[in-house]
Image (cartoon, rainbow, N blue to C red; front, side):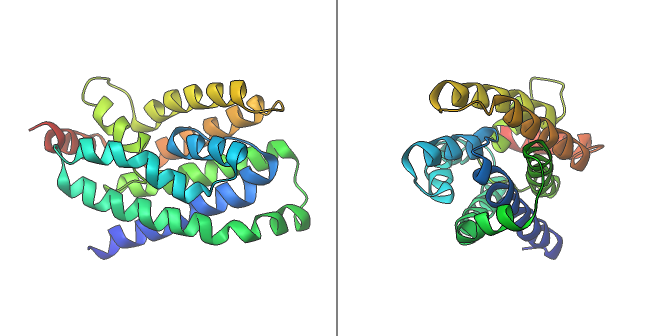
Length: 205
């Protein structure tokens, strides 16, 4: 594996784990995509987020297997490592809440931006955490939008579902989270149209 890709997967996974454990979970806030689905299941049934991410991403990986095995390989690595780090940092999530006093709004925005940066770094180097990241790449074949914008649209659907299923009113904070995440992902993947075009060709040719 190229060193820069390995570094992107490692740093991106750590950022995602930090954003989830230290910013979102203590507040019961959602992110979007597979992470958002994993958080909904975690809040409802207390199943580990990383494990749910693995299970939910499996059908998407099976689909991608037929289009881009190189992308699939690096995305599996990204998913496995990020899932491991997320569950590894889980016992420490509430220490961060107790010792650093920020408002829920600040935590939600910073958490989303950190997660979006981690995802964006991985996408920029042709990896991902699986799930909606890969689906967003598929949609760029048909929709002339930045990957981060497509992910943002998917995220809105996920937090709307969470609003229906979860107690409490965290929709606004979740909305701030995915907005900040979408901005961060877009910034990280900015001016990468050539890369996205190459990825699309590898998916569908």
